[in-house]
Length: 257
Image (cartoon, rainbow, N blue to C red; front, side, top):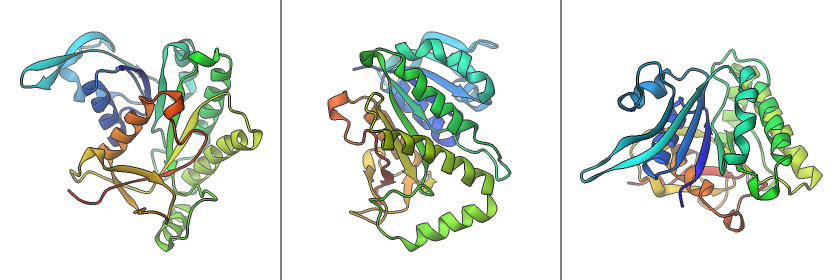
């Protein structure tokens, strides 16, 4: 079934792949980016100059066909995003966010504040209209179900040293969702997907896995295409099929072609 997807962070390396795979699977896509230049370049053949809102453009499917698809871009600062998003939540089936600190000098907690606002807004909707919220963060967020992994501990310490502002944002994101866990509130379906090292190495896109650090086949790497595939497949699921709702799984990818 085709979904109406809101993708936050659509112009980053992971976001570009999520948008592309969502389009290829025939979903209606609204993509948000602080700077949408890369998004517009990626889909330039479908965007008329100066036009950000697209309806029923044709995207190449490969030999023998095309996708008929609705695609919209929202470009603004995060501080201006709320007024753009609020009217659309009731029309969205899932929100996929790959927003994250965009530099080593990053400061602030605007992403965590955005997630807190989104959850509050979703509670105002009838239960049947509340979209599934899928956000990515890093394995700097430690889950009680995690095992022990020395490499991950070193990686967390390294980030603390070189990017303390990014670390504070990550911890603020964790706090937002831990408050949801502790409240035992089941009104909004959300999943925090914890990532370690992302790469682009051409592995099968279906190789994405979910679990916990240091347990049951976990490795520290994942292809961005695998991440995109996992998130979209999760967004496509009916509520009863969502295994990771209100949990914080670690994601990784099969390390074999």
